[in-house]
Length: 246
Image: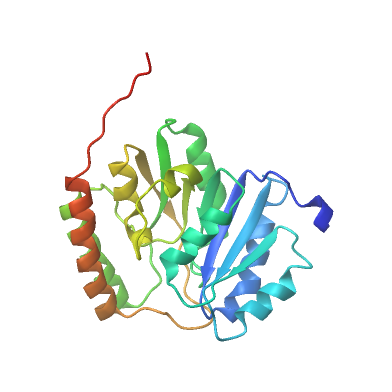
């Protein structure tokens, strides 16, 4: 595929935020292209969150071989939610698939999310990945289970795994949500607050093959509790009503 053959109107935009993931970028781009080429018109939007390793260099080098690839770069490090938001704003498709940049999500799960969308009710705007067999260390799995249990009890979002990076959602619905740092961890609750249905889909999970995690359990727990209170407040203050034009 040449630059001239890049789809003018992709049906799906795959948004991938990265920070210092040089070793995971090329394998992931190749996997995404292998899964989607010939199946659906797509683009890949990488958002480099001001990496200080060779991530930007790796992305730039890949553009010649992957005309579907677009590269955005933050002028300063702003976090995963902001990177996702930047990618969604720049995306040209009406539907967005997200993947974590660490390579632990499997792009081969994207067609399954698209299939789930094809049979879902029209008001289902989010298809969230559910890591049924996580490949993280025991401490990270325990912290995630505890956080999910607390979140589920407080927000009642009927979602077993909000931390999974692979998701499929409507761009317009996402951009209408209240934006704040770490919002990506609360997408099911925020979508439901807006009046949309959400569905959890079992997906694969892989061990990290390169680089190191950018999070620690203590920092994630502290930030999560603060955000959880904020999201609960948003839900408690929300009001939905039908509108009829006469």
